[in-house]
Image (tube, rainbow, N blue to C red; front, side):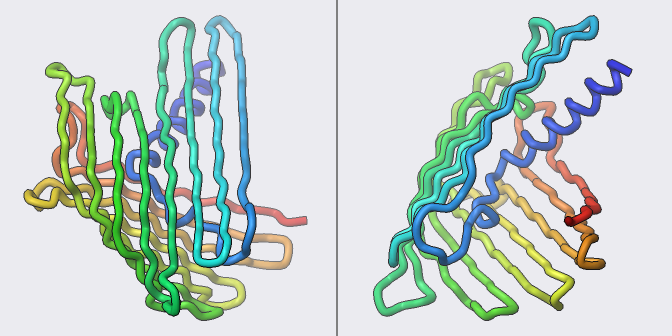
Length: 252
């Protein structure tokens, strides 16, 4: 029983760490309401059943909007320790600023900075900073479409056999779609494409698509598929990670 609990915990936190490899910022946006919105979470768990298992997580998801200005602050930390061994140790901090150009409802300037680490992918440290345009192509009651193409600087330090350090300039091209197909069926899809600006054979792709279906007033079903692909990952790390998740919810 204890081994099953460990496997479940490892599987859950492993996917949380994989998610953080390319941070999906678009799904964290809170809409057009002014002022502060968001949530802060802090979790700690301790289990001892022959082995000591400690789990810690901290999540901050805040947005502030005032007129043409928007600030988004994200923080995600995950740590899991079994006896004296760190099984999971990953996290990121992300700060983003949007400014909507005056007299333009479709063009924004997007600036951001991010710090990140992930022991599963041998990522000791990654720092990125970027600036570029974000376009609102469609905004109706039923559908919203955004695309962006910032240019970003990336510093990356890997804990491989050579302790590799790289410095790149990458594009951060993304497309975000939200579509209320019917009152009961909704679709959200976000895709990021991050190529090296002078070596397009070196790129990352991250994509997530979620269908939400309200079966009755009390019952809802969500199904989602997410995949991340790195054309040039660290040694001994696979290129493709993906998963498919389903959730049935009872509302009351």
